[in-house]
Length: 578
Image (tube, rainbow, N blue to C red; front, side, top):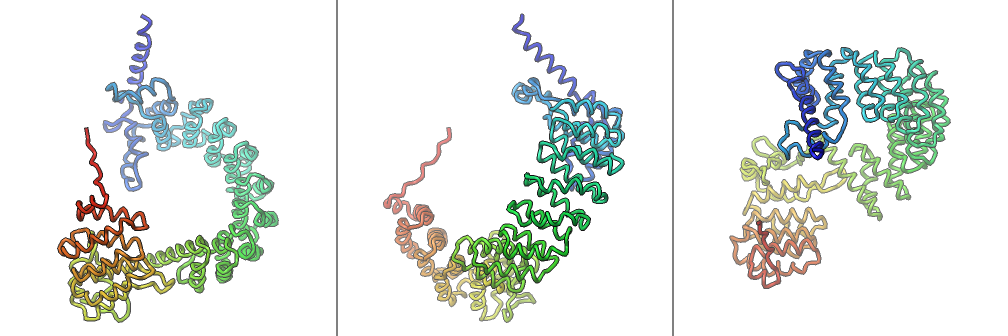
């Protein structure tokens, strides 16, 4: 008899849960239960505000009297063995209809309901206050209390001493909205400045720092916290002091010391606060920080100095870009990324940094220049029109070259346009292939690729460009070398010598691409070229670059499997599915 007790108990729990979760007893609107409308409300995206408004109307139509008991149940649901069993086995045993919502979903439902009902649900304050005694439910209860208005004031005060640090921290905000005077609010929250939890202390500093209309109350509490050994607390205090402007002028000597100290986070916050608290001292402090201070503070110092002394900030930054100290130059390059590409003097300084012997500095300078060029394009447009270039039907060559097919290459009407342009088009396209933007003298891949597509589209008309393209394939710029080779493909068999030459190019990516072109359908129409290519691709099996070797292996297998097997290449066995 007793061995059936667990089954009977589980059955009883299932029945109880079914009764609790059944939609039949849940208040409804337009035939749909409260839970449905709660979900619709909190799931609605910004683009679906109509759905959110519809749910809000429905929840209010159900009303606080009917909804609050359900919301309290949702807020108080706890994890347990039955719930865990159902979550794990509900579908397995075909009791999916009994599978409960997750705890977090139910709690979000409860919070949503109190948010919509607002002060109409204030009569629930007592029950919600009781939940504060349960560590597992205190936070969701606090979230709900924050939404019911003035009646929650005593409970929110109680939250400030709750065992859960998240409860103490969260309660600071809603308590401010229900406390009638600043004096009373500050008096209530100031004990939390001594809280054992850093996040609570920081949140309290923010709460007191928001009382900018009462500096006489707030500042005496904030200033002592500048001496905190906790970096997070000291940083937060410095940030909040800035909100008080010159009313916090007495803090300036200590902020200056903090800005010159070794703790970087508090120093950054102090540098941000000084221009607001002590504007007459800001230029000197910020300038010294940029010129001789901790390099890691340079970004903050320059960003604060620019609105005050734009020319001085730029002058100091360019000096740092030419500094003999590597770290100062590296930090200056990072700051340079916040400027415009056309800022006077910046391009020359960054180009010099890009040639630095330090690979890290050189790489960062190049990345910064590319980023500035991209930002410049986004602001001014990406199309490049060059004076003297041909046009057709009122559109410049640059416009036509921007017309691309989705799968690559030029649009059909662009090809027609190019074929109607003058005899100097080929020379223009070759020039565009090696085009460099004028600010930093960097290659422009978009312009270059457009030119490559243009030459390919001209087909045999582009044959006169082959000698120049062959020469460009020897460029130190691997991107240009690759695009020059690609540009030859449209000329058909005439391109064969260029592409075969690509197999011995200095750039691995060019060698790989050349092998790919020679092993694909392009070479199938030229059997003699394909046979010649096989010999050269076999040599790539011993290439010093591993990626080239892999590429050559795959290409040779596709071209001639007998030759591949002869050279030790074996097919990858297929996977047998059982």
